[in-house]
Length: 300
Image 1: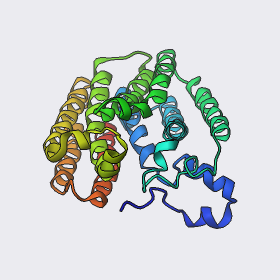
Image 2 (image 1 turned 45 degrees about the vertical axis):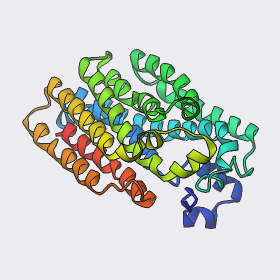
Image 3 (image 1 turned 60 degrees about the vertical axis):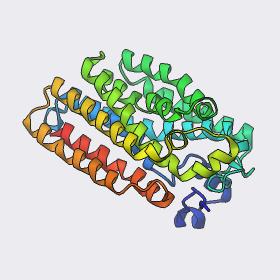
Image 4 (image 1 turned 90 degrees about the horizontal axis):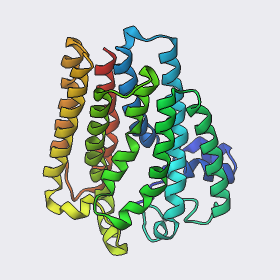
């Protein structure tokens, strides 16, 4: 049986009132992995578009801060949207039944007000970016709203998540250069394939519950062929990202550094066991380190 996906944080439970705890857990601040996976494609793009860490100017450092805050806020907003749509489903799944909206600790009107505050903060951050980045920010909003419905409509909700979650690659490039270039598009496509890999691994945890309540996912669709498809997704991701580095003239040290994320992906693919939900969660979280290794290659 799956355990709750809320990861209790001792100091939060000890020092904060219950209401504050509920909003923290609603925003998934107990699980920063989602922030990392949302943030990293944007940081790749900023680093590559700026020409690496040695070429950073004050504006580039400011963008790193803005994108980091924006990732925290917009990931939280996405979680609220997801939990509003899924509140009647979450209560039926062991891993999600204790989420604040599903459990009734935060009402729907309260969640909507919280979402409005988060979106307001996101809009303030967006206003500090270039015009192209602002337009991209508005373009992704409908995708954030619609994503939670995809697992009801298609076997490929992971693809829609990738399309939504990797907009940071486009926005980061546009924030630095003011335009979109082919390397940014390759980073975006590479990020989509990366998400297809890691989110299919994540979905392995819920295959039984998803089947019972009629939720679709690639983990269910692909079945025993999951490992082969995940290898393909990760391989396509690496090819696209490496091509983006090449077209951005990243340089010899970057190309050498790209060996690190390639080896990291290969290593944790070899550990994948589609019948082990706990290991699937560990391997899903390991993608933060993959993303950081890609970032290191972009910075050098």
